[in-house]
Length: 226
Length: 266
Image (tube, rainbow over all chains, first blue to last red; front, top):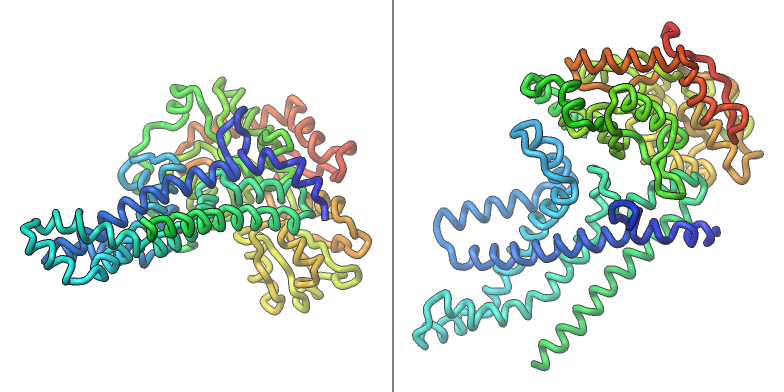
């Protein structure tokens, strides 16, 4: 074991070349995951609401789109968005934006179904109660169904966010210097310490994901009391 | 992924004409964008101070200087160096890029500026002649010409493809494979760093002779000419030798005699 190697390269692993260069390492992983997590939550709730409230062909169209996004690998979406859009349409999207958008879209697609299921699980009685009080469908959704559904959906959101944190490592394909990427650079420079380097990387992801889980558990306990 | 690359290349043949002349674009922008490896010492890697370094980086620097523009480096790996070029994210690829007929369909190569041979590091005594290759489990780097050559010429060998050289080396040291294959230039440097190097040896033969060139998008003849002129000039002025000696010369940890000069017949 060569712990000194990790210690010597700790700043690079934690925040890349910052402040002398662009942000990287664990800090960039956190940034990518936060932005994509927020995006996926917004898209997921909006998608779930739309799947519940819409009818007819708009609903079928959305369901098809969600199904498509769930069926393709994240890596492919990142790869194609980054390399194909410039060729086809001359659009040049920066690599970090590509990764965040791809993760948010796919995460959002997974969450949309979770959100729709959560809304359904609130039960017809709650909807009927709202409607018979004279609320409109959208008011019933906003005031009665959604607050209950979001509470139930929290575990599946956390599930998705944990998967999303780990999926940020796929950003390597377009050369985004997040944690796994800088670790690979370090591993290739030093050549003979893959055990140390990747044990450290594994530990970092573990800490990141388990703090999210702990925070979510704490939060959901408070929601229940309230 | 392979089919995807082919598709990209196909598209690029249609889209290629849409761009103006790239040499003009570079001079207008005042920036030359070059894709170099960031995980492949000594050709391209990130040093302890977080700076990109290596033989290919030096060449990229020299070309930018000749064009009178700023150099912008872009990290690449074997999986995305062709897409980066084809989708116009970079102007040149200087990433230990072996010239092959297959790749030349998708892009143009400069005159060779480096030559390597496919070599092996094996457990001592296992690999004495090419005929032994077919009996071994061999680790190769995914997507490299070495992997392709091995699969084509030695179908009985068990070829295991790894993401990069350190992982292949770890597999060798753990006993998952009996030998690993890469460029001689890289393996010499690698073996010098292995803590238990007395257990391993370089195979006493080369399988191929390969030439590395700078990748230019297809049809950019003026840019290609400029790159070739720069390379020829670097050799003439002795700068090419200086660059070589910086990474492979007698004072480096893994010296390697220079057997190829720019302009030599490939």
